[in-house]
Length: 93
Image 1 (cartoon, rainbow, N blue to C red):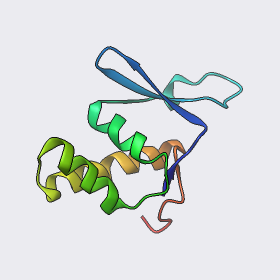
Image 2: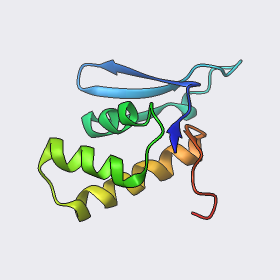
Image 3: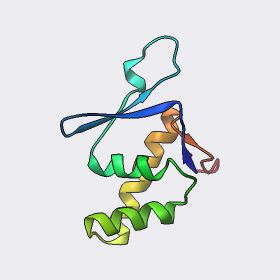
Image 4: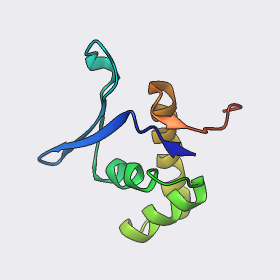
């Protein structure tokens, strides 16, 4: 899977936003607010990667268990997929 290049990560203080760049009409509901962990995941998703790659990146950076990281990652990926910000996602999820 990979992040959709039609979205860009922006930061305002401690808040991170994934903003769609290619919409002809601005739609605030397509903006995805996230945090530092989401920003790390998005940066990792700039290259083709697996769920395991994301899990490793988060658990290394934040010293949390694989199970905790995986639960958070799966929720973030669902949000990305729903917004169209994730390419090559598993179509069966």
